[in-house]
Amino acid sequence: MISKLYPGGKPKAFNVTFDDGVLQDVRFVNLLNKYNLKGTFNLNSGLMESEFEWTHKNGSTVKRIAKDKVVPLYNGHEVASHTLTHPYMDELSESEIMYELKTDKDKLEKLFDREIKGFAVPFHYYSELIENCVKKCGFTYARISEESHSFTPQKDCYKWKATLFHPRNSFDEIVQRFIKTGEELALLQIGGHSYDLDAEYMWDNFENVFLKISSQNDVLPMTTIEIVEYLQAMEKSEITENCIKNNSDISLWFLIDGSVCEVKPYGNYCK
Ligand SMILES: [Zn+2]
Image 1 (cartoon, helix red, strand yellow):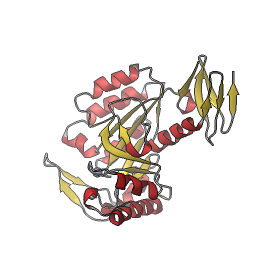
Image 2: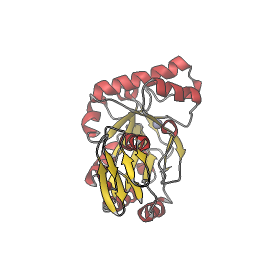
Image 3: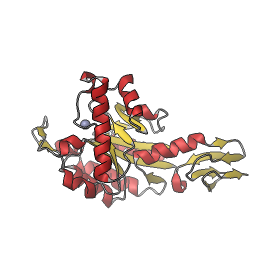
């Protein structure tokens, strides 16, 4: 019996994917770091340079983190594109969409000195046109604004759904279900905005969840791109009843007859 595992032989993965790069991210990243968890932060490089701010519906002020603060803050976490200026993309032409995506990718790559492979859709508008632009710009995945309500990893990387957003009332129940699940390659991915933790008094709630998740030995904290690339490598492997052929350049992990087994890049394993 062969079943798939995450890197290091862990059966489950956990990630948060948070948007907009706002001041509350400082507190949020510190919380992730405290529990050795990993986040994906979706940023608008065109809004960092301005004093752009807006008022949340509960009255609090939401402000972006300045350009000179973001690099040290997100160290150890994934940075992904969220467009240059957070526009309503349904109002844009193809060339305007391309400009929003490409310019943000280029600016973030220059600023963070690393390749930016992920994209998260601003607001809720997504279409075939936007999806094609995301692919043309060379992104590996696009996280959309819908929820999967599932621990099954997404099959379509360009319509990637987090498990859920802002799980105010159901958060503890979902985490309990995740801890108990025996589903293969189970993934819990929470989407959101750190300013909502302020607005909805959810800081303690999140800290309790992080504490619980980090104390589970079978859960691996991963960024979204790490998950996507690992699943793509897993997809390329050939698995029969007794043999595994790893056709990728990263190690893959399996549970084989009760033992954890690493199959090295381009390696084979036969029982
Ligand atoms: Zn946003």
